[in-house]
Image: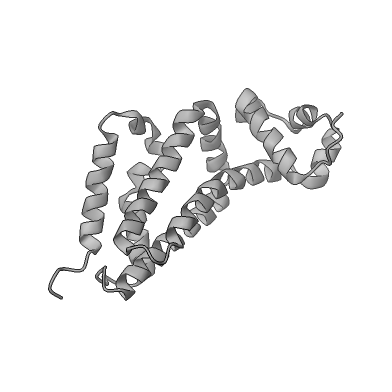
Length: 199
């Protein structure tokens, strides 16, 4: 029995470990409770259902990426083009790292992502909002041309780069030429946003 107080965060950490070990099909709340040395009722006091627990684990996993990228989006003094390039590279690196460092857990999260589409949509909305923040700053400073509402431009950037952040493309992220391919797409996207010289 652990003497540490049982918190939602401890439960989520244990759930992640159980998912890594057993996969989403076999992992149970009882396994999580056993990992923590508590009864499964104790886990249910924090998360009402197994589904709520899995949703919280998925959100926690996605929020790590959102937090990592927010510092880039919030970097006001930085040139908008450099910020957007760094943000896109940061997103790609975060996704590649998750897929490469722990492929078993990444595969588990692919299953959980499919189960929790509302959590995924919320994550995408947060990411697009960060891009919008950078695009808005670029248009406002005369670094990017306005091709329509900032939100539409941000969504277009997100969609155009999906090959480098959508988990469906994860097997391609291991190819040796993937960084060059990412660079080419980033150059194309940024070139399309850049305000033409002499304007």
